[in-house]
Length: 273
Length: 195
Image 1 (tube, rainbow over the protein chains, first blue to last red):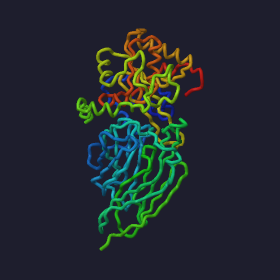
Image 2: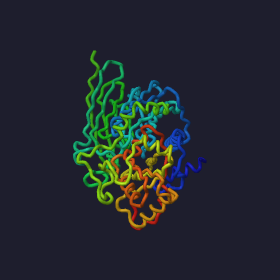
Image 3: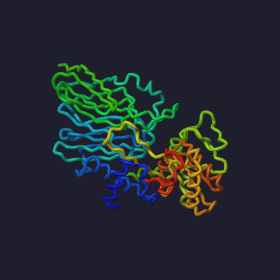
Image 4: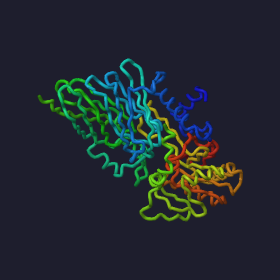
């Protein structure tokens, strides 16, 4: 397929997916891998433009269950062995209708060696992590995940119940030792409605209401900022590492797409002795 | 890497079938007299009078031996309200390779124009052969494929197969292909305001 045609198809897909009927309705069997590669090429172009992204490197690794128990709560771990040289991490779930799940920008107080979050997966799909290195180069990693129906899975409660306590935050801190990075877990109560979930009683779709931005800072230094999307699971839980230099507190802000804004400061127990 | 995932099919089959099977209805859903008019997502009956209920292995065998007409009635992903402009909305649909995707054809209340268009399209796909095997599917717990199966039985097709596990059951052990809505079905005259 010529690239200009692909671009046209892509643009049409962004605007009027239901009218995109011009292509072949019958794809030949056995071309799954080439179709997946082609889709990743299109997504990459949308997000990263012409940037060259190296694959097969060791800068970033994805761990995900091969088969997820719950497609609306798929745990993803992003490991960054080369943590001192990573500036940003992107998580892309290729076959979700909104593939760009999360984008992390690390600050000076970050220890990006391990990041965990939970996502919705709409269909069996490749998942990509892209690391932007401090020298401006990009590296990618891929994992194939078997899960389906995660974007439209209802919450199993009314919307009102799901929104109770919206914006409440908790933070758990791992073991603190002087001079060592610490792992922390941020939990935010928020339904992160995808807009694709149908209320089983009224048969209406619950409008999308999801966290768009999270910032985490330690003292006056940024740990990370995250741009999120409807692919992030309800009640987001993010495990991350930080460098406990100086005094806290750990401050978190979260903003959703309907103007919700929440802030909370967590006192940090400093490493004793 | 991916081919490896497909290998242990036999060993995993039992598990997969359980995982992909439509949930059993707590009340034992019975076949409605006509077409199902309620929400398309919901518990379905175990049977479809006049049609054969098949699983993924049977669909694979049918494809190999009889080249059935494969009809997918999955809904088109609907863009949620409230997404920021400029965000990447880029849905993709995968189904059984060689399928014809007829979104909306499983509705219980197709108007006369849509019924005519469907009848003509299926006649075209089967070459007018009422003995040609046909498989209807979408996702688990989807009345759309049940309704379409029933419609085809009513139209006189004698080898209608209903595949209730649908795409979710199929992709556990088989390749899928990117699909787009069938152009001639999408271009059907609309008697009423769109979906």
